[in-house]
Figure 1 (spheres, rainbow, N blue to C red):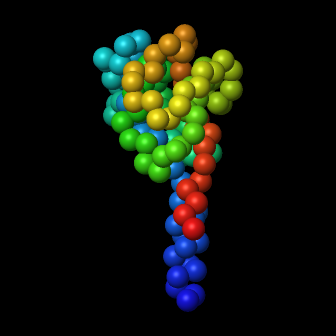
Figure 2 (tube, one colour; figure 1 turned 135 degrees about the vertical axis):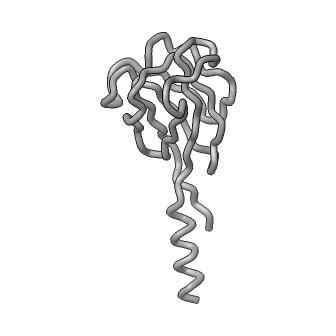
Length: 112
């Protein structure tokens, strides 16, 4: 019984995340330098990209529903922002600024 409880607690604490490709242009064509990708976990904000981007495309939304993906002008996850559903796999490109950070407000996966 104790093993079952520990397994349940480990699964209940798992988080959703979103991995996306980031692009220097406004139509998801030219990947930014480096890997061109970033991953952000639910309830966090990623400021480690290093290069601003003008559009993005979600390529993995493991643990969906992950919530709202928000792009920010400042690397401190502040400033002008624009949010999208993390279930949107289209080219996310109408935020109107060069993004420097991305946050994911969402849900912990709760499997009971």
